[in-house]
Amino acid sequence: MTVTFKVNGASKTVDVADDTPLLWILRDHLELKGTKFGCGVGQCGACTVHINGVATRSCQRRASTLANATITTIEGLSPDGEHPLQRAWEELDVPQCGYCQAGQLMSASALLAKTPKPTDADIDTAMNGNICRCTTYLRIRAAIHRASQMAGAGA
Image 1 (cartoon, rainbow, N blue to C red):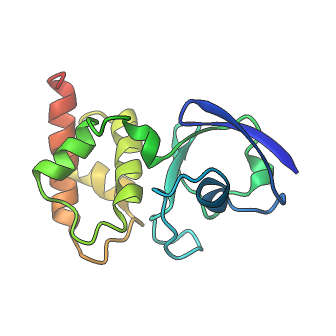
Image 2 (spheres, rainbow, N blue to C red):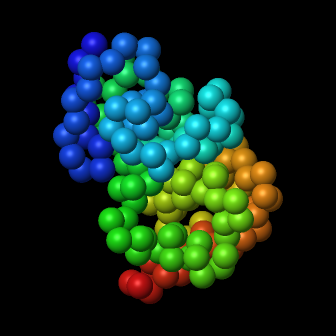
Image 3 (cartoon, rainbow, N blue to C red):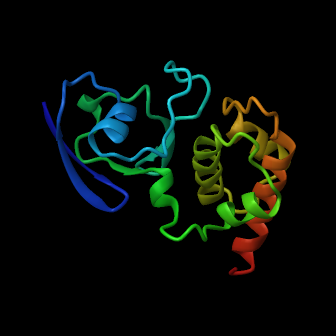
């Protein structure tokens, strides 16, 4: 099937089987390698992207559901790495191995778009299911709070 959608602000058309996961469309057809394959069953969150502004596991979304969708990947979060979350992640040394971080950042950015001043409970709920094998959960939560402060200050 041929499907057209917008990725990181650019219109894209791909010809793939209708059951092709968005994850593989991004990585194999569009060469956007920031979105990671983790578990393949939507449980770990490593492949999280935004579809129409909603944090979504890309391994679970099929090509047949993507017509006219607006997709944002980690590459589209900020062209220069200056998104408050990216800056807070660096400032607080969140990543260790880094494998889950694209999915973590995409879930966190969806949260902040909806809830600019989240509580710990808001963060825990939004980030539930994003697995970090290095267990940097407390630093992730602190970085989300820091990014919220940065965004509120216009930084």
